[in-house]
Amino acid sequence: MSLTPSESLAQISSAQKDEFYLNYLRGLFNDGTKKIFGPQTTIRWNKEIQLLSDMAYFGLTTLGDLQTLGEEYTQIIQVGPTMNRLPSRFSRLIMIALHTLLPYLIDKFLCHLENKLAKSEHLHNHTNLQDMVQKVRLIFNVLNRLHLSAFYLQGIYHTMSKRFAGIQYVKYNLPGMSQQPESSAFKLLGYMSLVQSLIALAMHVISIRNDLKPVISNSEAEKFGISHSSKASIIEEDKPDMKCSLCLEKRNRTTVTPCGHLFCWKCIHSWINTKPECPICRESLKPNKLVCLMNFE
Image (tube, rainbow, N blue to C red; front, side, top):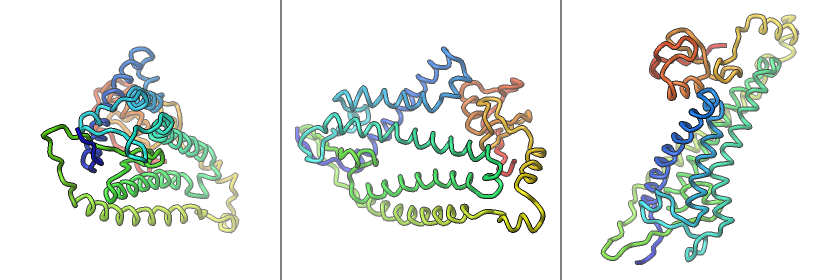
């Protein structure tokens, strides 16, 4: 058996296989939580359940000196920067934390920031900070695409977590197996993705800079005789109840059901995946019947 540097296709196939088993494990954790604590608790703690299942998967495989199911399927092995020994346990722990815990913490912080902005009428009505937070999320996605472009061009470090931890892959070839040559299509795809991601990143940065400018300046408000307190009171009087019946928080991306009830987009979709009916009136409900009210306030 010989060891050679792993090609890009094997790493991509391994990641796809791991994602399949991760989704399966998340479903098992969700089903177990639903049976013990009920559907509402499962929906409320959905992200934490996903984090726990992902950490369990990588903890039992990568941290336990074993291949993941995807790595075993594609016959690749994790190695350290020297390419001649397994990565240290600390490097693997760093990789798992960056791959699972860090995205969760970033998402949790941005959700907390969105809730704070939603409760502050002054910030909500004089700036586009809520839209800016959404664009920050998009910037993180663009950065991941930029890194993926670098992977297509270099053929190493499929994820940013592996790059920071210095973890690469080698492929073991059994006797009689011929190694497939690396396709040049990955480099072409990398260049195309790189250009597209750079353009998207520039557009998001410019858009965020524009969102930081107040929609109505203080001088304009005084010109029309509108104070911040009076505007806030008017909006508060005209504003309907914006709480979601599932998470009991301010609705995010308000979505209406055919029976006329309003929920968060993620909440109602998570509910339908568990039980395909309206949580309030129990009318039968399908995902394609939900309508997201883009300009609802």
